Image 1: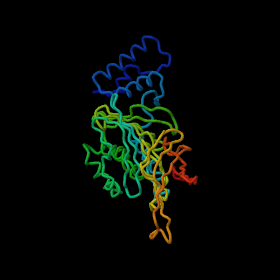
Image 2: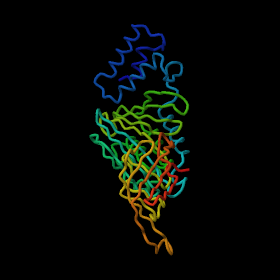
Image 3: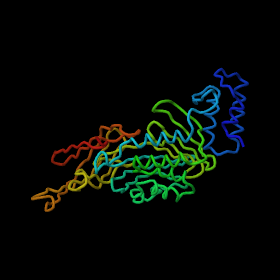
Image 4: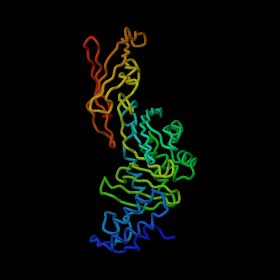
Length: 349
């Protein structure tokens, strides 16, 4: 059976940017034949392919072949991913942050993850999508242990096939840059990948790859190795979008409704604000009432006394970092006696 691209090229073998009514009708007829009875994960790719072959932005050599094969593109993405920094490069207390959005029709689930160096994962999720569990599909502890190709292959092979397992790996929060490269290498070596569309250029070039046998498509930025979107992996027609990723400093505030607590002394918990009830979370400035618990460390922190105060916590100065992430960069703790303590938080330096 000829591929979608072969059918398109046969319908219009010579791109022409000046479409007359007959050409437009022919292209629409071709698209209808390709998408008839097929799931929505292929329709977008077919649509762009039709536009590309009649004068769009799909790069071709001699108006016939894609510039690079799927294997070459995925290998490039893996090499680019390997050059990206990891949280441990920023410090042992830094965290990996990821936000993903899963949609199916009118149903949407938004999930944020923050992963520390030991693999512990904080999960914040809103909404439901059939078949989607916001908890990581791979045990975070297993992911920490699987630092080489053999270990990652074992994890990938626990899914219906290795290619789908590699995609599951790339959707895991806290995956290291080297692990991402290995996952892309596994994808590149898998049979059944076909380039569907190429949009943009340079670092913004987005390539969509179709796995027709699995009824799955996925889009990557080859220049950075960022996986952007997967359709059909969670379930038929479920679209998963990686909305943002970043490396955050030890003290940061994340969560879809704001954190219940913040450790302002980083990892030692000698200065906490608990029981936070947020107002205007997600705006340029958000505030919460809570309880500060602070160790006076007298005569030392091990023998100190913890004191409690009702406080107001204000976070503001949102800044961008990583891939489309935007987080608060300043926290202020305001005490009843007028004292205010300010700290820089958020993106890792």
